[in-house]
Amino acid sequence: MKELNNYNQRSNQMKNWKKIIILNLCLLALVPLYAEVTLPAIFGSNMVLQRNSDASIWGKAEAKSMVTITTSWNNQSYEAKSDKEGNWKIKVGTPDAGGPYSVNISDGQELVLENVLIGEVWVCSGQSNMERTIKKLGNKLPQGLNDILLKSKNPSIRLFTVKHEKSLSPQNDFEGQWEETNAVSVSSFSAVGYYFGKLLYETLDVPVGLISSNWGGTRIQAWIDEQGLRSFDPSILDYHSKGINQNRSCALFNAMINPMLEFKIRGAIWYQGENNTREAEIYDDLMELMVNRWRDRWSIGEFPFYYCQLAPFNYNRPEINSAFLREAQYEASKRIPNSGMVSLLDTGEENDIHPLNKVQAGERLAYFALKETYGIEGIVCRGPELEEMTIDGSEVKLTFTNDDGGLTDYGKGYKLFEIAGADKKFYPATAKYNSKQKALIVSSQEVKKPVAVRYGFKDFVVGDLYNCYGIPAPSFRTDDWAEEN
Image (cartoon, rainbow, N blue to C red):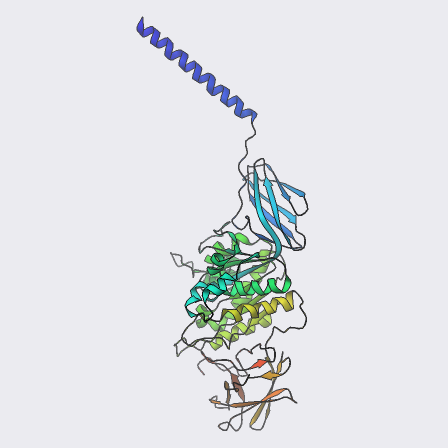
């Protein structure tokens, strides 16, 4: 009898559990199930969206669900249905500069992005001289690191640093977050990028968003997509290599550029080339290719692209003269529309490949943006560029474009000119500026019949040729002789 009672008791318990399970299932059936909306890292609180644009916002949600975005700057709602994998993308109209605003995103569960600004967004990319942070320069800063950082607090400038990552295939996301500028965030951000954005804000008086995507010691090939490199030279794709590092072709484009391709930007600044000094003969082609591919993939037209020419440095490689790489960078600037190259011929350091003067690099890049992108009148962004060479006996006359206000050496003396005759041997030359002819007259007692002139065409020099706005000329040559000469 006792066993029968135990059996009946267990049977009743099982029936009760079944009733509870069925009841819970019925209740769940009455409640809509929503997967929380997720966004790539490039979207978040504190972000800056490009002003006066149709800004794309995308992410993941429940499959085939309706996603709604409501923007506080116009109280307007935008909708799109996610696909069978939950992917969705919505374009929202942005006004002129302003904020802070909020962005509400929902597929039933709400996600709110707060403290959002509308302004100017720029990508800052390249290798170590773009990546170099103010904190890493601290032991060489004469004015003191504390002074810079304490004055950096500005809620209208926002920073996003992409974490180092590499990939053999295109990725949809990376790691990083938007931050306001303050002593902590600025200390670990690109110094060149910060000084660029700081001058933009001070001049335009609109919010500025800066996205730093850099990796030191990398070749340009790593920043170009596979389709671009395949069209250039399939052998450059490194498929023979089993492993992957940051210099693998496409590896950084896949991991650190591809995830933000549809994020609306105004333009990009770039500082790279040190790891391509052995490939000067193809670098101009690769740089033109990279810019074209970025523009094609971003699908916002020929956005502004401004970049730094390498600063002089003693590479201690007698077989290579990095001036040829600087020349390739200059040649690229003439072939890439809506671009500009900053000369840093006067800011290099002989024994440090990472020159201290990042202020000049960032601000000279900003001059290009302010003059040629934003139309600020009364300033100059381009340095003197050789226009014509005329030989008159033992003298050479050089004229220049962008010689605004005339040429000057700021009292340094023109010490970087060399002249060669038909024997292709270069000798130091003297140069004097003729203000009436607006020309430099160059000569050397060693060369009676000159045929070629070079200026600053060595690994390490300290530039001394400027226009009167303080913009230096790049190194140049009038010959096309082989590198070993």
